[in-house]
Length: 124
Image 1 (cartoon, helix red, strand yellow):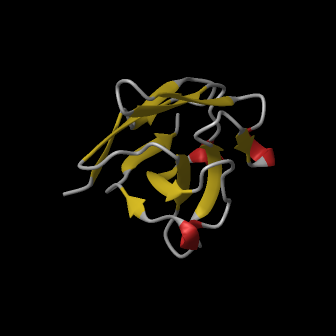
Image 2 (cartoon, rainbow, N blue to C red):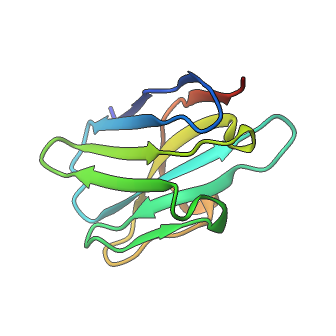
């Protein structure tokens, strides 16, 4: 059974930091891109960041310079370091896996496996 489990969300003040983790299991994820998405009520799920199997990385413009995605393939874990958080970063954050050897997609519809999400709330 494939499982993706996110952790690390919480309540933080504007300007603060959080590190999200996503641990995946149940199959080999060799050749999979790992992505982070977020969603707020009534809105579409939004691409945040992704890391391909070969290390290509991409971000949505609104988080460039503030968020960093990384992955530890030996630990089957992908991270999202979030700094300088803003209230507009408040959302439910999901990690996802996409079978794509040499790149990554920004389209959530192409991702095969999803976690349950972890809530991030940025508020004073």
